[in-house]
Length: 410
Image (cartoon, rainbow, N blue to C red):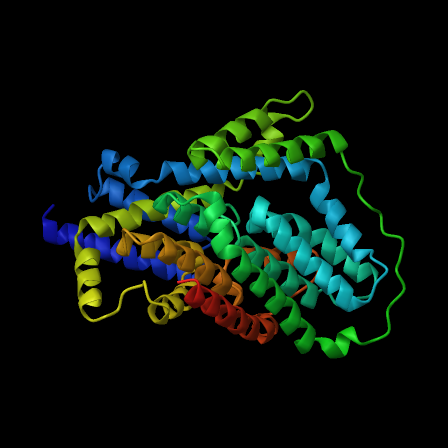
């Protein structure tokens, strides 16, 4: 096979892959984003466009190790009943609907900063819907708050969401330095989510408070919960050491697999294997494109024209467009392959802006999509336009605040 054919094939596979990322699936087929990424990697492998050794080199295993370790950690909390307990506790608060909204946004934001946003919304959505419906409340604004708060809160840490994990591994960023740089924009994002949803839905929130039924609060397995809390504390302590983040996450994940009561397969069942496959497939596709030399030439051309992502005027629109077309995880993987060797400050900006931009539309982040799909299975339909009515203004407000913070902090 000639080099020309190789490049043409790689470009065709790359284009098809990211069109699939934007659409979520191919028309007429049930293959989803993870399947599309895997199929693309298979096509590149069987045609010889990438070699087996090239596939191994392309996959960023430390990022996958961090993701896997955090999924095991979150599975430990799920096994304790913690997420169900939180959902029903919030729904059963004898407070006004505005207070309930604040509790949803704050809880999802705080949990997502440590336990990853996708996992938090996956676990909390069904019982939150059930509890709110039992109270006679419309779950839709609270679901927007759940996903929006999870996205905003996850921007605060290197382990809050998949794209931050990738950015941290790529740039070798320090956990606590990242927190110092990104905590304020995350708080601005949380405040923006609450404020905009309250303004858009205030007519509903000002209605009379419905009676609070006796909700069946889920019992907590205190032993499993304590083990999870100890594991989180140990992980944060390890992040303060020179030990690589991937090693730290694997140590904690491996320790949690050792249990007398909780079967290993029960923890593995809660691991998001399709997300790991999605990452691996996209790593192969983007590395194959990088090997053609086209991205480096494009970067040189953009830099010569004054377009480089160390400027907010470039990074912000790129993050918004990428997150709400192909999704923030694929967008970050693509941007990091096109723009290598970014400074730590630019990586902080990319993490903040790509995460907060994910609140714009339902397709902007996996957390939004998961919330909508899980709510549908619970009998609640959250439409694209309903989400956008809140998502667009709260994203613009949070990005404006984050942009000012990034500008003032250099």
